[in-house]
Amino acid sequence: METIIRVEDLSVGYDSRMVLNDLNFSIPRGRISVILGPSGCGKTTVLKTIIGLIPAISGEIYLFDRKADYISEQYLDHLFLRIGILYQRGALLNSLTLYNNVALPLKIHYPQIPPEVEMEMVHSRLSQVGLRGNENKYPSELSEGMKKRAALARAMILGPEIIFCDEPAAGLDPITATELDDLLIELKSLFGMTIVVVTHELRSIRKIADRAIVFHNNGLYFEGDLKALLALDDGFINRFFLKGKANA
Ligand SMILES: Nc1ncnc2c1ncn2[C@@H]1O[C@H](COP(=O)(O)OP(=O)(O)O)[C@@H](O)[C@H]1O
Ligand SMILES: [Mg+2]
Image (tube, rainbow, N blue to C red; front, top):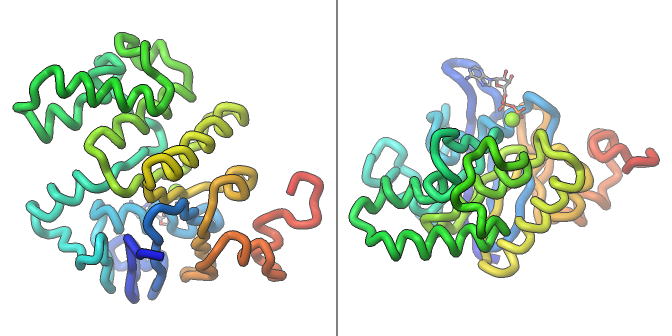
């Protein structure tokens, strides 16, 4: 299994406040990895550190087999072509149509793009997320599920190799959340996308995850296949997965 992200002795946090210590884990290419752990344990902080939004306290991050160099603007420009991010709130711009929201990264990164090429790319992404035909709608005219899918189309427009999703099901009803899970699975199987998802939703974890990374007690608690995680007989993991309860 090819590794696409690897962290070595990584400590993350804010100023002098350490949130997670001495992490070592890797993310395989072409799989769905979920990041799990109690609320406030540092999942979002790790994602933000990996994508270069906050500096690591110590340690190293390797992306695409190369040591990340978030100080270099050239590196960051290049990185943002290869990763897509689905923000928790979707973050569509309300004043732009669906078409223009999805086209925005293209317009920013490739201002010279011919309009017909842009249109083809936007239409193709909208088809992939099941939103073709809604180009002229504004975000206020879209359901929550459609907004998430639109945000996913925008995250994919530059053809990233990895998509990061921070709690994508937040604010979605169970049926819409399931549709989003199906879409993530499709992106993996049809396009070989590597997907990293922070989630609490047990049903979603069981459905989509190939691999799991669990944080607890300020460190890495588990890294491995979901099957191995579910097979563990461990107090913390059992509580997390509500084992033995009817809704498990
Ligand atoms: N911008 C920030 N400045 C200082 N502390 C923060 C900031 N963002 C989050 N934290 C703290 O870092 C810890 C981890 O937060 P976070 O990564 O958001 O957790 P999770 O995503 O697992 O719920 C929490 O204690 C949180 O209060
Ligand atoms: Mg979070």
